[in-house]
Each structure stands twice: as C-alpha cells, then as structure tokens.
Length: 461
Image (cartoon, rainbow, N blue to C red; front, side, top):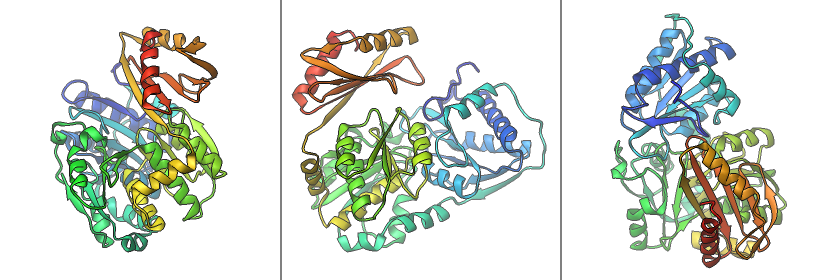
C-alpha cells in the first residue's frame, strides 16, 4: 500500500506486480471515499481504458466495486482515449477514472483520476485519495451500471471547434499512424465522418504496441517517416497510448517539435480564429514560445512541469492555447486536459487556412521568431531522493557553466538557470522515482552538446 503514489498524472505500476487486484481495489476504494466525501453517492463516475494488457479487466473490476458502493457508473463499451473520457466528465458533470499508463512501456498500467472539471487531478485531490488508501465506504447495493459510447458527444464538440469544410478545401494528403493507440476508431472515424481523405498504418490495437514504446516520437514513428519520404506533399500524425499526446512529421519526413507546433497554432488561433487571451506553457518549454507570445501581444503564463499545472492555469486564465514540450496541448473552448486528437486536427486546419505546407509554416515561424532553438533532455537515475536533492542544490549554486555565466535563476519547478547567451538548463526531480531530469536549450547543436558535456563535468548529470 505504501508503494502507491500519484505522480504528475496518476498512479502507474507494472501489471502482475504492483498493479494487481489488491492494489487496484485499494485505489478504487480510496477514490470512492474521495467522491463520496466531496460529492456524495449522487455523483456519476465514468470509466474508460486504453489498449494495454488487462486494462479492460481491471477497469471492469473498478466499475463493479463502485456500483456495489452505490454509485452510478457509465463504462466505456470499448477502448477510449483519455481526452474523450475527460470531455464527457465535464459534459456529464461526472468524475472519471481512466485505466492507462499513457506513453510508458507496454508492461505498465495505471489509473488517472479526472475530476468533473475535465482536467488532471491537482495535488490536493490526489493527496486526499492517497490519504484514503486502506479506507472505504459502506456498500449500498443501489448503484447502477451502463455501457456508454463516449465518442458521440465528443465528436459533436470537435465539429464545433474544427472547420472541417476548410480542411477539405486544402486537398492535403496525410498519413495517420495509429501507433496501436486508443485514438484508433476515434481520430480516423472523425475524419471519415467529415469526408476527409487520408492514408493510415498500424490501425489495430496491440497490447504490446508493436514491441515498442507507445510514444509519438521519431524513433517510434520510423514507418510513418519512411512512408512520408516516399509520398508527395504528405504529413503524418500519431498519438501516444491513451491519445493525449501528439507527434507530427512534416512533408520532408522531419519530426516537428511540440514547441514548434504550439507556436504555429498560437499564430493560427489568433490570426485565423480570432481567439484572444494568454499562452500557458511549462517552465520546461522553449523560449520560442516566449518570443512568439511577445510578438503577438499575448500574455505568457508559466507553470511547473506537468499538465495538472497547465490545466489548473487553463481554468484560471482561459488561454488561447496551453501546452508542454512533451507533446500535450489544449485550447480555449475545449477542456483543461491535453488532447492529441485535437492537436492533429488543428494542424490540418492551420494548413488549410494558410494554404501552405507544414514545412513552409515552420520556415515562417523561425523567420518570425528570428532565432533558432535546439532542445534536449537528460534523465539521470540515482539511488535515492537525497542524491536527487544534492544535485539540485549543486545546480542552484552554480555561477557559471563552462564559458557561460548564470544571469538568472527560476525556482518554479526545480532549478532553471538562464545563461548570458540565451541558453538555459532546467534541473528538476521526477515526481514518482529517484530520477533527475535535465532540460537543455540553446541556439545550435554545437552549443547544446557543449552544455551537455559541461553539465556532466559539473557533477550534475
């Protein structure tokens, strides 16, 4: 029981080890007590699951327990993406429980608790749930269970946000790489229902995700990249295992970073859709977003790493767009939860409005920003939290790194050092394990590699 911890986006563990019937029952009872204590038995609970091994079995166990406690449970009749379930939490004024381990390796499974505001649970909520472990509420036997299709209302909502008629006029050829993810049967169905033509690969669910990580990054999208390179004027889209993250390949077969996508969409939403407001980004996201926000007259709001912080800021500021460098975003008029399906559709819409290729939009962006940005991240596994804290303290006391001088320190999440040439590093702990994450940004590969080497020389990595 002591091993159950909620990180930046839920509790995750290896199936058959810590993720077992006993622990799922403990977490379900803890959530049941949270919902009962804060809302009562009248609060509906909706439950979904991604394609992972045993996700359907454990989610059904969770549903059965909650019905026995007296709750009304709407249970997805099939695999469902996290953002689809989250949207229905808001629509139905329900709490949601999603069984997924997102982009983690296939042997993992997890539980996300999504409150009725349709975004990730904040720390005060997850702390209360963890505090409930080992506790329960009395069985009522008056609950109800209903299979539910969560796509219907989500699709209606997406059609209100996205201009599919405009997308059709662009005549763009593109590829949907299903990546064995939960968006299969959702992203492609929305496209088909709106008469959008596309090609697709890997559109079958696989509990092992093809033997790779269910993460939409270039190393796991090689088939899509090769298909694009052999095609004409084609881009490619993919999502992670539960569909809340996105990955985009341009017409040249190059991966377009989430930072660039967020910046391109900020320009699109303000120029073509007339949205007003702020830009929310995490402290680990690129300075590219700072520059684009400033040049477009959009207020910049920075949060700690993790979409639970981004989502909280969305509920407070109602921004034009909000996102993080790991591939999550949402926009004004949608939910405060990252949505990979929406991200993909917004890129198609931006291409149609601008009547340009994605490569051209990237070129326009870099000219607009007037500076290049190169990013990387180093993950350092350590023995314990004490070692993590020692290295963070070491970073905090740095006055220089190689030839670079520290100009400013940001302590919003870990330690972020801004250098005199515009480069920066962010040193922060993982929320769930003794792991140090080191984010680095500079304006050239050469500088980036020098900083990486100097980070190691300084004893941080």
